Amino acid sequence: MKEVKIETELKVYDDVSELPTDVQELMKSALEARENAYAPYSKFKVGAAIYLDNNEVVIGSNQENASYPSGLCAERTAIYYAGAKHSNAKILKMALTASSQNQITDTPIPPCGACRQAIAEYEIKQNQPIEIYFMGVKGKVVKSNSLANLLPLGFDRSFL
Image (tube, rainbow, N blue to C red; front, top):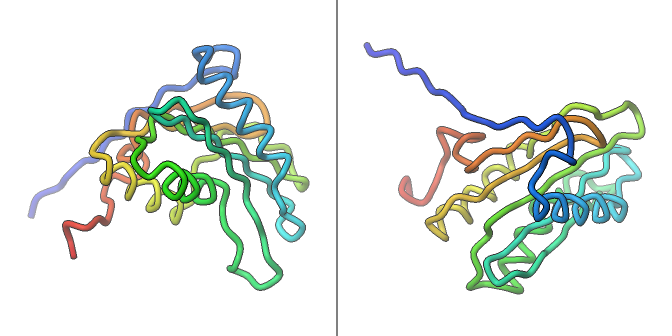
């Protein structure tokens, strides 16, 4: 038997003002997208903004449905739109922000498991890491240089 240790390296900023200017703008787009979330059931709104190598910014927000789980998370809404609208562009950066009507979200909220898998697919497809920045409604912002930091034992096409 062999024991394996997996480590993740993340960068934590105290707030949005510490981010590079381009990432502040991307997070601003995510904040605006969050306001368009349709979350009448969970009361949990998420906004995502993606920066592509063609200088386009694509946004997404979570969209719920009374018929759970027919809704879709903000991250997947944005990433699938980017894939459909800009199929040859690479995703360079992604900014995420979440808020709840039930509590103050002042800690960074990472993508859910399904979204991590979707982001991983695009990272593998483009053979290039995607920088991911995530936060709550205020406070610290976490940066991951790659989705692999958030999903170290990912499932991909090499298993098929």
